[in-house]
Length: 618
Image 1 (cartoon, rainbow, N blue to C red):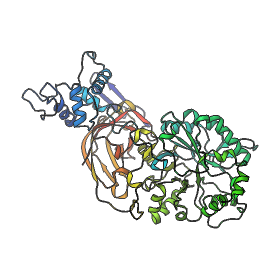
Image 2: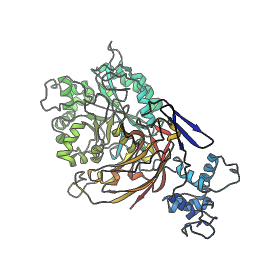
Image 3: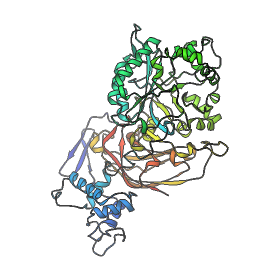
Image 4: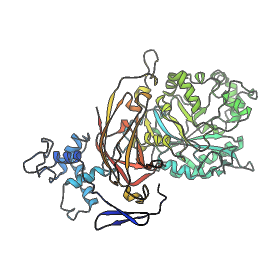
């Protein structure tokens, strides 16, 4: 809803809201005070001292002197709570005292300079502060010294587009926004300008308006590491002449300077690690056209085995299709590499542009199965459309997993997604695909899953793949995503309450005549056997809904599962209104009672809205 004229008034003296109906009737709704739930009260009483509290977990909080809620939780007691109840064994007394001081400072107690402990209300507020009590680990904690192929990488598609794929503007602004969000792979489509003397970035053969390449490169330089120190990969779709390719090389070298990384050799035997590429920028694209032509002049004929898909979803000439089809012809490459005379003749002529390409890229020649044969002494990036991935995973799923153990696999949206929508990313992740390229300028449930996955590992843009995706058996067997496995663990999720809507929304946003009727939906998204959906009851006419409901999710592959949470407001006559959402990687969830901030439809964090939840693994 939200279109109705605001008709409520707030009565500060009585703590209520008046909603006017038909301009003559008033409906008064009392604002309920947010109070601790029974579980929060019990936890406080168990660890607080004084007032009948246990003071260290030794009692259940019962006492003839009181129920313990009038006690105080000092630094040592907070340490015990964080260790025993929240699973945070590394917290020191000094760190706990800093948390206490921060809570007291925020709550503006008159006695904030003399108090050194938390009362029940302070403790309750501490649990609701998402920066002090977050649901997932807020910093980088995974091993970052493995090759790039061992990580899922936050990847954008057509990163320069402001809207749809056919007629929106191209700009450096979406590139900046993506980098600020933590995206580590930026895609740019390079085309000659109208005079053929400079380079523009645009979605070719569409009505999109161009942006100069130099603007995008300078923006990448300025914002590449604004949210993460780990490497930024620029994937280029190159439609340039040799002269303009040389100009791109000159631009990149001058603008990026020492930030630009490229190897000494033409190809890599193994990818470097994110840790070895801190604050570095690397380029990934297909080798230049003239380089391929110089090594194989017979490239003008059409190859009937070329895949009909195109990585940039625009029509290609037969010549370009044939060049792409030759990119990873291993027999051809080995013959050319053995031709010393050709190597010596072309060494000085080899374009600087070619030398700047760290990750050589391509698309399938003929069948994907053939293209995914692992080469011992070379690693590369292969790109597949979402349809090609579906077909390949249906017939050769283990080949995909095996290929992604050493090489990079990039998946891009099908060309008919003109509105910049996205596809389901889990099929790629469960098969080890590192680069699931998404339209970051759109929004929707698939993009929420992408945001959720890359909240992991401190939001640095690199998430270590589970070990089982990197292992091989005695007979070269690998993880089979289609195989149903036994339950590994059960995640129990308890939804206590929500808060913050009254601060972030007009009081008639959800309903013109009464407070909102909120409910929460939860989804597990992972391997097919783990997918599940749960829903709380509807709490009517309340800006502070208290559900206090627990749900269980059996998980066979928790390492790849995401917990998607969505709050809705029930509407009897129309579609239920959106009240916030988030998505969290199950493997990163911190046990215990946690504050869970919610986001809007575009993935921006709401200012005040959050849930209080509990997570338990059994």
